[in-house]
Length: 125
Ligand code: 5GP
Image (cartoon, rainbow, N blue to C red):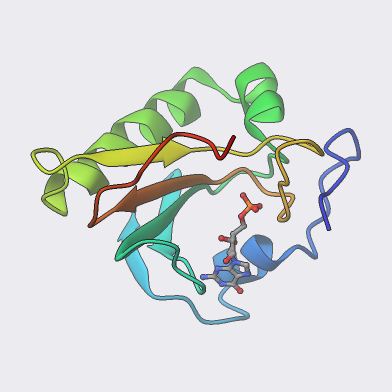
């Protein structure tokens, strides 16, 4: 069920629980501002979710309220995770769903990293 990204941050969401260590996740990267872990239901051989540690509902929220340090850390970490996973040469795709039409399901900003096979067209027609 797509979420309403105009609602305030709900700290009962599943990624907030992963951040607090209340539910497990296969963590692949962590720094002061960023956590990355494998998607529980991978859509490609490599499917990593990168999230800020701060309480941001979506890309819209983060780009408006995130600090320069958080935004810079998030962008750099996303690149580094992909680089260190060896994804640059074969190629990879970043995707961030925002709100209803996108189908965003978890109301904590996450960027998907997809890789490991030819990823096909950007969107189904
Ligand atoms: P969205 O549709 O919001 O962009 O993507 C949400 C993603 O979170 C989906 O790809 C889904 O498989 C993943 N996901 C949902 N619940 C969990 C969970 O408990 N653990 C992990 N690792 N991924 C989850």
